[in-house]
Image 1 (cartoon, helix red, strand yellow):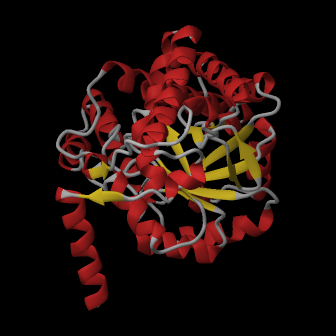
Image 2 (cartoon, helix red, strand yellow; image 1 turned 30 degrees about the vertical axis):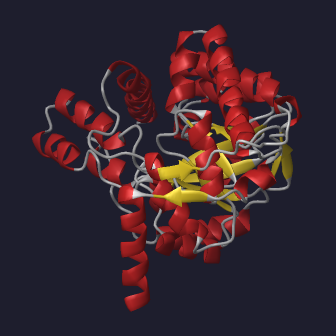
Length: 372
């Protein structure tokens, strides 16, 4: 019987490893960005300042988040773990987090709970980034399943985490061939967990966005920060649709195609959440450059997170990753210079104009909320 259980456990680990590998390979090699949806950040119009009265070398990017000072309001967002490829990627990302003073999130650490052999693919980040702010990661679906308090503590210890992210991915679970779309009781599970651990808890989506109503519930539960992770970037529905095709799952594939662009655009997420809660917001979902980071900060985000752009360069080489990081910082600093903002505080108080679809959607939402 023990032998049978061991064999079953090994099979489960192999399934998870395969899924984790596909979670890297598909975004890098297939077209899984949003089809018709965008972040709507293109509808945020910034007003040029011809008299900036600052020197670009004097611009400061540092910011405070969850009691920690960061050199820039940038998070390397959670992506991967559990495979040999993930070990190399997390090593390179950890080195960047340490070098540039960024926060870094790890991919879901469920695989590390299933097999000690997979722990290093996560812990490598801490080994190369002893001073970085690392964010552990577990799925809300796993909390509903009954993930124990000891398991959560093991996840935190795995990377000596400074914070814990709980990811909400109902769309992904709906379409994933082996998905678990059972979320009943999740808010209570999150609330209980907050009381059981000592580090800050962040809740994040994975690309479909967090509505203001959900944001309010999370704030009341005691969450310390929210990563809105809106739509407009990598589509996890698209990724799981491709996996469903490979698994010859007709219904899952159809659902993936139908809901490919499902979600709340990132810019709208940040705007609505910033009007609804007063805990720090992390903007993510389709951010690709420093100009978009600046826009999100102006809309109300405290930090901005990127996943795919860092993953892409980390998979290429250390040099490409470093060059991209320097470029992002130069783009953010350049945007601030053209707006006349000497630091992040002055940036977030700079005027902007909302136009076209974003302005229309915001007005429509506000009208309906006031009417109700």
